[in-house]
Image (cartoon, rainbow, N blue to C red; front, side):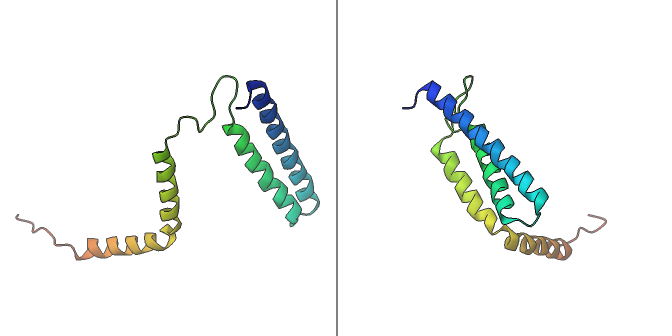
Length: 110
């Protein structure tokens, strides 16, 4: 188990690396907007920033400390299902429109 002081030091290091990568990306992208190096720095900086946000701090535990395995499984399944949503959403919309058009209508007197 990592001590609290060690965790604080690592959290600070991740934050500094995130800021450094983001600043390097801004500098690189102002020089050449189509730079692959600048894009890589930006992605790594944003990812490190996300890691910094979920690491434990003095006043709160880690973001994943209270997450159940069922929640993780549900998120993974939803991510896999939503990956196919680009195909199924138009099919669902067209099917709903056809169903709405051909549904039985109520007569005025009934």
